[in-house]
Length: 144
Picture 1 (cartoon, rainbow, N blue to C red):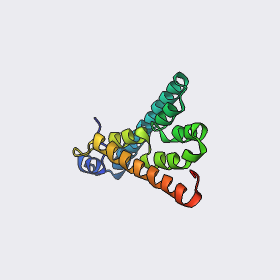
Picture 2: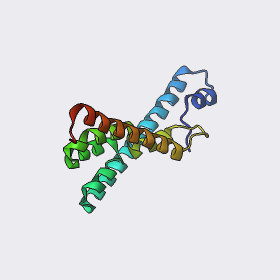
Picture 3: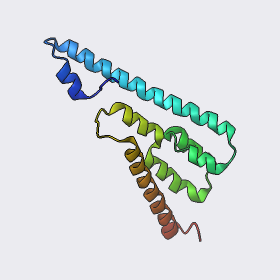
C-alpha cells in the first residue's frame, strides 16, 4: 500500500531540489484525489444497481447510507415527510460508508480501526436522528 502521509513524503524524499519534492507531493495528492473519486464512483454505481433490484422504501432508506450524495437524493424521494428531516440529518452526520472507506484509504495510522470508526459514526448518526425526531415533536408537533 502506498503511504500518503505528509511525514512519510517529507522524511523519505530527501532531495536538495525543492521542485522534486513539490512534484512528489503533487503526485501523491493526485493519487489520493483519484482514489477518492473511484470510491465515490463505485459506491454510486452500487446504489444504482441495488436501487433497480429492490422496491421497498425501507431498503431504499438503508442503501441511502452507502454514499452521501446519492443517498440524500434517494432519501428525498422515498422518505415520508415526517421522517425526511431526521433521516437527512442522520445521513449527513454519518457521511455514508463510502466516506468511511475514503478515510480508511487515506489514513496510514496503524491504530485506525475501520470497524470502530464506522460504529462511532453510526452511533452519532442515531443520536442525531433521535434528537431531530425530538425537535420535530416538541417544536413542530408533526407526530401529534
